[in-house]
Image (cartoon, rainbow, N blue to C red; front, side, top):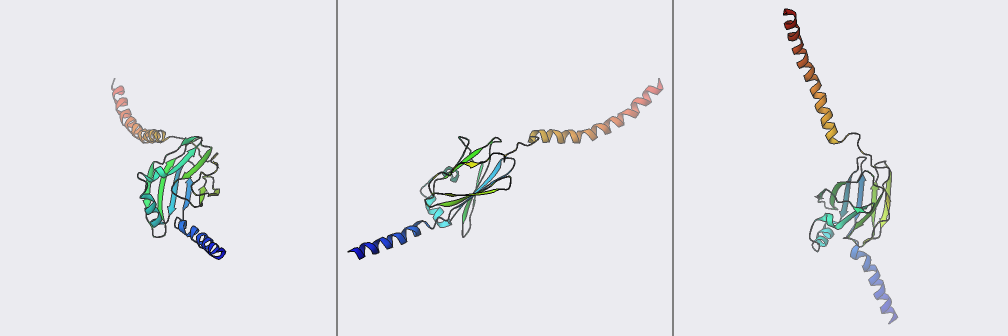
Length: 184
């Protein structure tokens, strides 16, 4: 009887890891100095397709970026199919004063690596325990507000383009004004 129990335990233990090995989850978040981010979530394509059948809605609803006590939602979601890994690429922007990020991905069960490529060049890798939140990830000092906003850049360009035109018009009018004043 002990032999049967031991054999059953060995079979169960050897089969358990194989049941979830198909996930092959990898997560990469890349930050830029302006606060924009690209989030790549890669999984085995077959596993991902089967898993998503049970969850209606956008893939963005399966992940949470919790920044300083508030959720930051991606602004775009793109699916990139592949034979070895299917990747969902999410893009968005962090607040300029972001300090701490917590991450959650609700589809997986097995542990997976979360790789953070900071805007300052450092790379941080954290092992996430499957269906669990990450620890706090330091974001401070990464995001810098631009010197000029996009509106400010547009106005500056319009002024730079208008100055030569105004000078040309002014120089064209100036000889005519002198000619009239000398006639008097």
